[in-house]
Image (cartoon, helix red, strand yellow):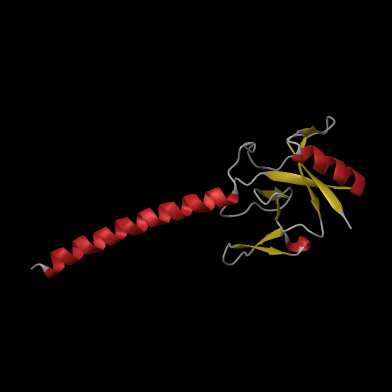
Length: 147
Protein backbone atom coordinates (compact mmCIF):
# COMPACT_ATOMS: atom_id res chain seq x y z
CA UNK A 1 0.00 0.00 0.00
CA UNK A 2 1.36 3.46 -0.91
CA UNK A 3 0.88 6.70 0.97
CA UNK A 4 1.61 10.22 -0.24
CA UNK A 5 1.99 13.67 1.22
CA UNK A 6 0.79 16.52 -0.98
CA UNK A 7 3.12 19.50 -0.84
CA UNK A 8 2.32 23.06 -1.95
CA UNK A 9 4.02 26.32 -1.05
CA UNK A 10 6.56 24.58 1.17
CA UNK A 11 3.90 22.98 3.37
CA UNK A 12 2.14 19.65 3.53
CA UNK A 13 -1.46 20.41 2.58
CA UNK A 14 -2.87 16.88 2.60
CA UNK A 15 -1.99 13.20 2.82
CA UNK A 16 -3.60 10.38 0.89
CA UNK A 17 -3.76 6.62 0.93
CA UNK A 18 -3.35 5.53 -2.71
CA UNK A 19 -5.88 2.71 -2.39
CA UNK A 20 -8.61 4.96 -0.95
CA UNK A 21 -7.78 8.07 -3.00
CA UNK A 22 -10.20 9.45 -5.57
CA UNK A 23 -8.01 10.09 -8.62
CA UNK A 24 -9.44 12.73 -10.97
CA UNK A 25 -9.14 12.32 -14.74
CA UNK A 26 -10.15 14.87 -17.39
CA UNK A 27 -11.83 13.64 -20.56
CA UNK A 28 -10.08 15.63 -23.30
CA UNK A 29 -13.07 15.33 -25.65
CA UNK A 30 -15.79 16.67 -23.33
CA UNK A 31 -13.53 18.41 -20.77
CA UNK A 32 -15.48 16.65 -18.04
CA UNK A 33 -13.91 15.34 -14.86
CA UNK A 34 -14.40 11.83 -13.51
CA UNK A 35 -12.71 9.49 -11.07
CA UNK A 36 -10.38 6.98 -12.64
CA UNK A 37 -7.04 5.23 -12.42
CA UNK A 38 -4.01 6.91 -10.89
CA UNK A 39 -1.91 6.57 -14.04
CA UNK A 40 -4.44 8.65 -16.04
CA UNK A 41 -5.12 11.22 -13.31
CA UNK A 42 -4.36 14.94 -13.50
CA UNK A 43 -5.54 15.47 -9.95
CA UNK A 44 -6.71 13.92 -6.72
CA UNK A 45 -9.55 14.76 -4.37
CA UNK A 46 -8.55 15.88 -0.88
CA UNK A 47 -8.90 13.56 2.10
CA UNK A 48 -11.89 15.52 3.43
CA UNK A 49 -13.37 15.68 -0.11
CA UNK A 50 -13.55 19.47 0.12
CA UNK A 51 -10.79 20.34 -2.33
CA UNK A 52 -9.50 19.13 -5.64
CA UNK A 53 -5.71 19.13 -6.07
CA UNK A 54 -3.96 19.37 -9.45
CA UNK A 55 -0.85 17.18 -9.79
CA UNK A 56 2.38 19.01 -10.54
CA UNK A 57 3.84 18.42 -14.02
CA UNK A 58 0.50 17.57 -15.65
CA UNK A 59 -1.72 19.82 -17.78
CA UNK A 60 -4.08 22.11 -15.88
CA UNK A 61 -7.79 21.25 -15.91
CA UNK A 62 -9.32 23.17 -18.83
CA UNK A 63 -12.41 24.44 -17.01
CA UNK A 64 -10.67 24.75 -13.63
CA UNK A 65 -7.21 26.28 -14.17
CA UNK A 66 -7.17 27.75 -10.64
CA UNK A 67 -7.14 24.36 -8.88
CA UNK A 68 -4.12 24.40 -6.53
CA UNK A 69 -1.12 22.40 -7.73
CA UNK A 70 0.60 19.93 -5.42
CA UNK A 71 3.59 17.64 -5.61
CA UNK A 72 3.09 14.02 -4.57
CA UNK A 73 5.81 12.60 -2.33
CA UNK A 74 5.63 8.95 -1.32
CA UNK A 75 5.87 8.33 2.43
CA UNK A 76 5.59 5.40 4.83
CA UNK A 77 2.51 4.46 6.81
CA UNK A 78 3.93 5.87 10.07
CA UNK A 79 4.59 9.30 8.54
CA UNK A 80 1.17 9.20 6.86
CA UNK A 81 -0.56 8.55 10.20
CA UNK A 82 1.43 11.29 11.98
CA UNK A 83 0.83 13.89 9.24
CA UNK A 84 -2.87 13.02 9.04
CA UNK A 85 -3.22 13.62 12.79
CA UNK A 86 -1.44 16.99 12.48
CA UNK A 87 -3.59 18.09 9.54
CA UNK A 88 -6.83 16.96 11.22
CA UNK A 89 -5.82 18.99 14.29
CA UNK A 90 -5.60 22.05 12.03
CA UNK A 91 -1.83 22.37 12.24
CA UNK A 92 0.22 23.43 9.25
CA UNK A 93 3.11 21.11 8.54
CA UNK A 94 5.99 23.11 7.04
CA UNK A 95 8.60 21.42 4.86
CA UNK A 96 12.31 21.85 5.56
CA UNK A 97 13.58 24.49 3.09
CA UNK A 98 12.78 22.52 -0.02
CA UNK A 99 12.42 24.67 -3.13
CA UNK A 100 8.91 24.85 -4.53
CA UNK A 101 8.77 23.21 -7.98
CA UNK A 102 8.04 25.52 -10.88
CA UNK A 103 4.57 24.66 -12.14
CA UNK A 104 4.69 27.14 -15.00
CA UNK A 105 1.52 28.68 -13.58
CA UNK A 106 1.01 31.85 -11.56
CA UNK A 107 1.19 31.42 -7.79
CA UNK A 108 -1.88 29.70 -6.38
CA UNK A 109 -4.08 31.51 -3.89
CA UNK A 110 -4.10 29.65 -0.56
CA UNK A 111 -7.84 30.29 -0.35
CA UNK A 112 -8.52 28.92 -3.85
CA UNK A 113 -12.16 28.06 -4.46
CA UNK A 114 -13.18 24.46 -4.24
CA UNK A 115 -14.50 22.73 -7.30
CA UNK A 116 -17.99 22.67 -5.79
CA UNK A 117 -17.99 26.44 -5.26
CA UNK A 118 -16.88 26.97 -8.86
CA UNK A 119 -19.64 24.69 -10.15
CA UNK A 120 -22.28 26.50 -8.09
CA UNK A 121 -21.12 29.84 -9.51
CA UNK A 122 -21.23 28.44 -13.04
CA UNK A 123 -24.75 27.10 -12.51
CA UNK A 124 -25.94 30.46 -11.16
CA UNK A 125 -24.42 32.29 -14.16
CA UNK A 126 -26.00 29.83 -16.60
CA UNK A 127 -29.40 30.19 -14.94
CA UNK A 128 -29.14 33.98 -15.19
CA UNK A 129 -28.23 33.74 -18.88
CA UNK A 130 -31.09 31.31 -19.49
CA UNK A 131 -33.57 33.70 -17.83
CA UNK A 132 -32.31 36.62 -19.93
CA UNK A 133 -32.59 34.60 -23.15
CA UNK A 134 -36.11 33.49 -22.23
CA UNK A 135 -37.13 37.12 -21.72
CA UNK A 136 -35.63 38.05 -25.10
CA UNK A 137 -37.58 35.28 -26.83
CA UNK A 138 -40.81 36.40 -25.19
CA UNK A 139 -40.24 40.01 -26.26
CA UNK A 140 -39.43 38.91 -29.81
CA UNK A 141 -42.58 36.76 -29.90
CA UNK A 142 -44.69 39.73 -28.82
CA UNK A 143 -43.22 41.85 -31.63
CA UNK A 144 -43.67 39.17 -34.29
CA UNK A 145 -47.17 38.02 -33.33
CA UNK A 146 -48.63 41.41 -32.32
CA UNK A 147 -48.72 42.63 -35.92
